[in-house]
Length: 88
Image (cartoon, rainbow, N blue to C red; front, side, top):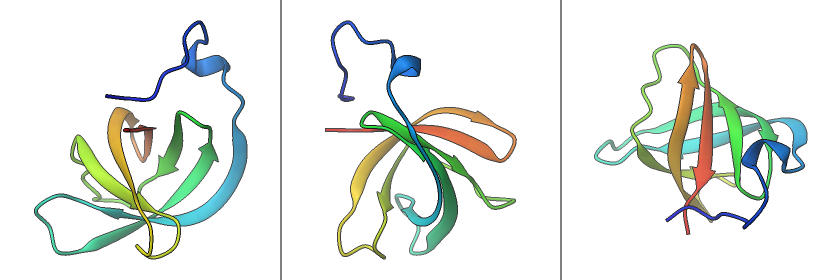
């Protein structure tokens, strides 16, 4: 289940703008896909995918080359951008 704050609309949560490379690990695939994180909040993030990157509904995201990682879920996708939520 996704992390949610009672009474706070997701779009109103404070986001930090950044351009950091993060890694995605898709279930059932042995490869790790790099992408750019554009903004980040406590509930999720917006990432820019490389062309041809297919995001499954559930995947893992890492900021540190998978020393640690977070379970994520795809919320929306438009062209090369995707909104993701952190799953707890």
